[in-house]
Length: 98
Image (cartoon, rainbow, N blue to C red; front, side, top):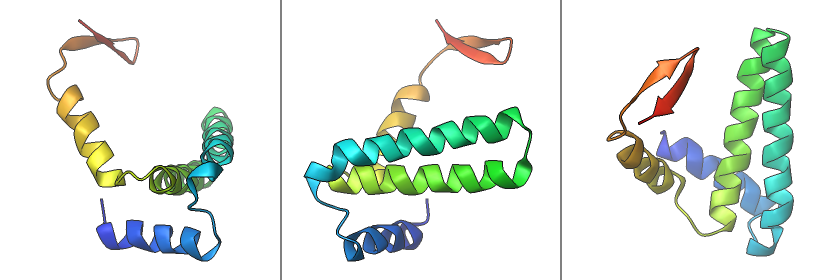
């Protein structure tokens, strides 16, 4: 993850007074909204909208993590450390854990 870019997103949020922890429930709604747009873009196979929605989703998650006092890269590292040890198989395009 590009730390400078993440910091730029956080600074953008700071400049707009978005980083207060009490904003987290509303920010979570923004995450869901962007993920919904991503689902719609995928359903329509609209490549430009898919890329835009992935980026927008990442921005909302970066801001949410900052609101809650978490470092986004630390969260990603923690998740990867868990999934990297996971075993299972892919069934019909979905990974199924053992």
